[in-house]
Length: 130
Image (cartoon, rainbow, N blue to C red; front, side):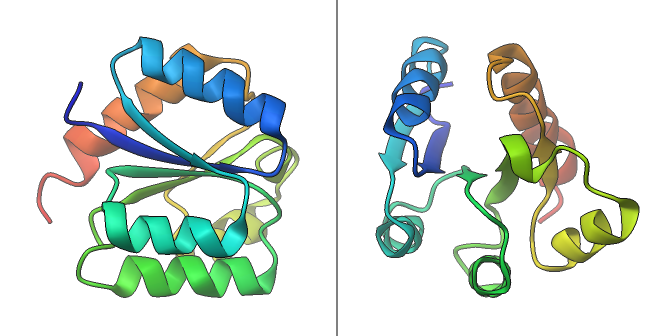
C-alpha cells in the first residue's frame, strides 16, 4: 500500500491527526491539510490516489472538486466525503454530489476499517478502466 497516496482535508486538526496516524499505520502515504486552497494545490502537485474531504460540500467546494476530477491528473483521484457531509444526505443530494465528482460517502470518521475498504474497493474495481 506504500504506493497509495492519500490527501486528507479536514478543518479539525485532531481529526486530521487521528486519521493520518490510523491510515498511515496501515501503510498509506498520507498528505494532510486543514486549508482549502492549499488542499487543492496539493491535489495538483502530489497527484494522490484518494482525496478524503472532511469539510462542507458547498457550491464552491463542489465546483472545485468537479474541476479537479475533469483535469488530466485528477480523473484518477477517488474523492470521498467524510463525516457529517455523508450523514443524512437524501438521494438527490448524493446524486448531485456525485455529479460534482464525489465518488463515495463515509459517514463514520472513526471507522478506519470502513475507510480502508472503500479506498480499496474504488481503487481496485472502479478506477481500473480509466
